[in-house]
Amino acid sequence: MSGGKSYNHYSLHNSIQIVKGGSSYFNFLKTLIKNAKHSIQLRIYIWNDDETGNSVANELIEAAKKGVAVFAIADGYASQGLSKEFKKKLRSSGIHFRYFEPLLRSSDFYFGRRMHEKIIVVDETKALVGGINFANRYNDVDGVPAWLDYALYLEGEAAFELFKYCRKDWNNEKELSKHFANGFSEKQCSVRVRYNDWVKGKNEVWKSYFNFFNQADESITIMCSYFLPGRILRKRLSMAAKRGVKVKLILAGPSDVMLAKYAERYLYRWMLRNGIEIYEYQPAVLHAKMMVVDNHWVTIGSYNVNNVSAYASMELNLDVRNKPFASSIQQMMDCIIEKDCIRITTKSPVFNTGFIRKFFQKTSYELIRMILNLSTFYFKQE
Image 1 (cartoon, one colour):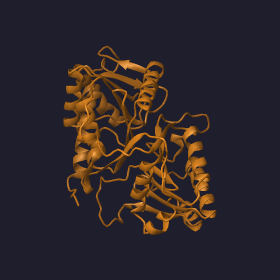
Image 2 (cartoon, one colour):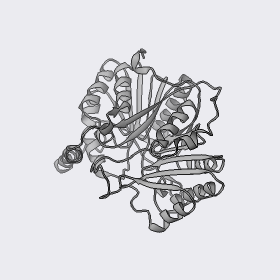
Image 3 (cartoon, helix red, strand yellow):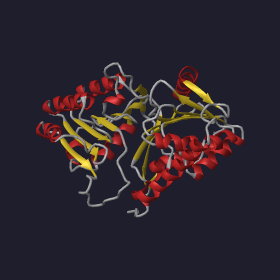
């Protein structure tokens, strides 16, 4: 892949580690919270009042009791089911908790704009970013395997940038920043933080995908839960395949949003016509959002490759430029393809469907486009 201006603005002093979802992630998260010394910043899309959600809350409460400053924001739509008792428990322990855009009580009411990010920053220079929410379905509970998802743990400059991003929503900048000690990780890994919020004029994650599609030389492997790219990204991805880039998609088999799955399958014909390989993950629902390019670049976070993430939701990804790390992620994805996926071809059962099923796939695709238009048509950029 060629370089250029679009690949600048990486911070260098970082160390990184991939963390798989399920019990591994939540054990890692709880240890991170337990070891917090003075601050925790949290932004989460779904926070449920179930075993998993309560276990995270209990760790945060214990941290607050030790004097750690805890600031948590949950999305006002996706987390609206939190009970009054749950929220009272958080606030009475000293945790600063609030909703992003509470339904029917927002001063800037945008129907489709939601905070889809999943970020936790501890002590200013340690962070977890990915697609994992605080709910049982993202954990291994009662013998039921978690949805397949991943997060990136990092320490260093990029984590401090995330801290500054999180704290802007609170009046605590001077108070917390005094704890920050100069000096970052001696390890050197290039990482950049990418934001998407159309209302604020931010489309950096979309640009990452656009540029990666444009400049890939050898391979693109995408793992995505709701893959419905818009016209521009579809064109760029097909152009990559036509110039000889090996493009593989790991998509959901079982899905929690069947309307999106039917719409996605409507695009399978386009994918196969353009030489794109399709693999459906079988053991559980796939919820990951990650891509590796040319064994050199990785992007991971909350961004799904569709127009909801591009134009409606607030999203955050991390781009990593590191060959050993990218190669390890490519190997991990190849292993998932080999062990846990079925390859979709024109002979697969999803293509051997009658007129009604094909009509439903087409209708699902058009319906999702209509929903997007209805939820964003009156957006205004600030």
